[in-house]
Amino acid sequence: MITEQNSGVGAKRLCHLKPMGEMEEVISEWIEKKLITTEVIGGKYLPPYSFMRGNLRINSIDDNKTEVIFTFEYQLKYGLLGQFINILFIRPQFKNAPHKYTSGLKGYIEG
Image (cartoon, rainbow, N blue to C red; front, side):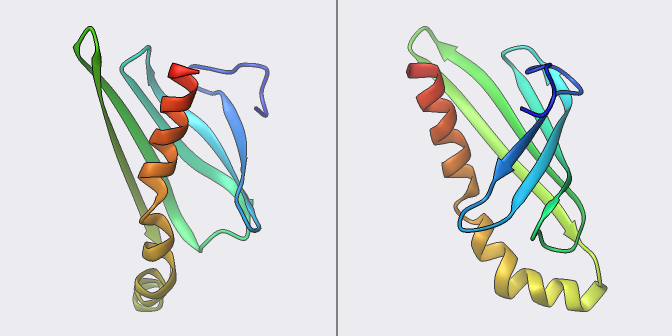
């Protein structure tokens, strides 16, 4: 965490991306045990983005089951060049992001 605050709107964290780079995120929306929205606000070696936002929605199905819905949206700069960069490099990298994000959550909850 970057801030002493570790939950709720305004909490920030720094994510180290392998094999290189880092991403600074801030929580922009928070509903306890229901919804977390994070926005990328800086970092190193990131794609040229206008915005990046991740949304994690948690729905209790019953006592033993929980549904987790992860959505991720972003927009790159540079118009057609940005779209080309997205198709070739960015989209393939983000393809595994939901699984990595939710598997970390599962480990945290069950651990």
